[in-house]
Image (cartoon, rainbow, N blue to C red; front, side):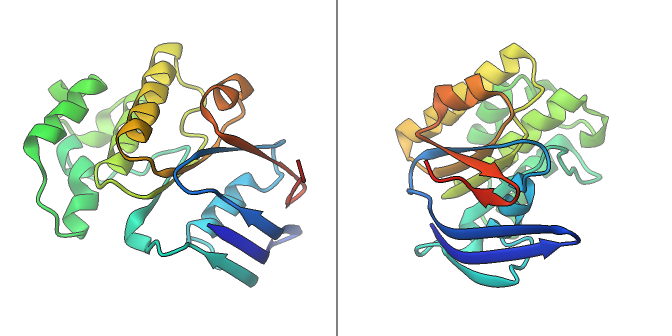
Length: 201
């Protein structure tokens, strides 16, 4: 993905990206102080926010192959299972029940498969959100602080699952996280932001 001459103004904040190339099939970290524009950048790159100017070349990817995970997962008023398979439902893909169960078991949610999703704890919600982002095998996954504030066991599990995905069929990741040790451990490249701009490394 190449981003050129991108600008997005929200109130007094202005995001400016002159030229940024995100190498495909790699894990990229985005770091920077609070308010520097990390979330605005992800939302713009994901197509949630429309840029005021500039271009984003997805190099052949379509919106059906891109997903974004938010710090506070949005869950629908239905079961864990229905929330998980929602990306498949809207793409008219029949769920592989064995894979669904395997994913839920991996994060310890198989027993809550029929449970009302909004009754889950915050950590369980993040796990469900993470699985939901993976289930349709996207090519570009953007993660906005979803991996922050996790207990060490869950953080290790998420890292393991990300690396597992990369071994099988590498996808492009854009991960915003304040925990530099986590970012340094799994990312191929780290992009630093300050005041709405990317610093040249």
